[in-house]
Image (cartoon, rainbow over all chains, first blue to last red; front, top):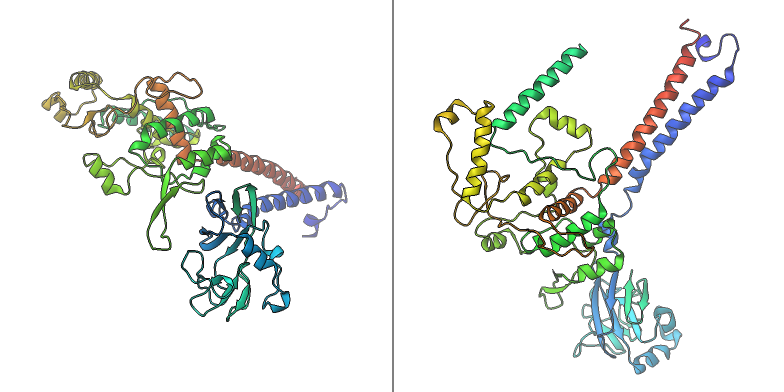
Length: 181
Length: 302
């Protein structure tokens, strides 16, 4: 074995080392290029990514009106808040809140409140988007399952829910079109 | 050994061409396509025109349900163009709060909207004949070139599914106006087969039989059995191309075939490119390994 792994006459050991290293390195590069797509395939597929965001045209939503859009299978509440609602949301003393958060942290534009409409208690869909639906004691939303009351900023004020309604990632593409996700 | 392999291949090929002429299946003429061969790439301009043809002509009966509007960006459209294109269609969504289904404008993430709600509705509107979905039609109709060795040779040349596109092209340009011209064409084929000795004894005894196109059907040279339910869908200047290309019947057929080939195999360019990369890499690695092996054995093999 010794005369195979070592040059017998000690001549040009570097050249053979170089060749072996080159073969090993090329093989490793090839292995990496082979493995990359396998690992990459764990990323979400293109059709899933295409559905990951929703664009909503808000131009038809009147002041005081709410709409519900579907985003990743969940309802998203979008409310065009009135001046009184904005004022009420901003005037709240943070000490009164279960999950303290200022209204400014929850909206990008004061008149548009955008949040995931899933009650943080046990996942029901709160009422309060349509005229005639109960809006709870704080003028926002009311969860019919276990009686959680949310205010005009979607914050939990009364009832069993532990957290405020979630705010998804969103950005206004232009004046009236918002991209959620 | 090598000689006998070649002889066998040659014999198979000759036998195969003979069988092809005698068989009922008519092999469509081969066309030049941009995406065949080792370096083939889709002709984007042609595919875009093909999309226009699909939209204006085919889509009244044929769906394209496995292609999403967002996929059109591969053909060189911008996101805004795709959005505008998708918005022309309506898809059923829902259920809404009341449990009702509703229609909304399509978005790029949606698949092409099919013209009929389901296969039965499509049959009912088309005299019982089902217009097939075109998403994979080029692959589905790629029935080859008439013989296994020929198919293998074509496949090795990177012509994998081109015979499907040849068929689409031939079908769209292969209508005969009436039974008279149809039978003239059939008789010509018969005479040629008779001359070259490709008719069976039984066929010779029976003699040439006039073809009568069935009621409500149309004669097509390349459709198996010649009775096709689809009326001749295109003609010269049937569409007006946005890029000013002259819309001859042949041009339209070529463009729609290119578009459908892309729809069937959108990954084709990527696949061919990857093949080259892999082969070049393996050749390089083979060279290195041989050099290393030679060096390793130098002192043993004198």
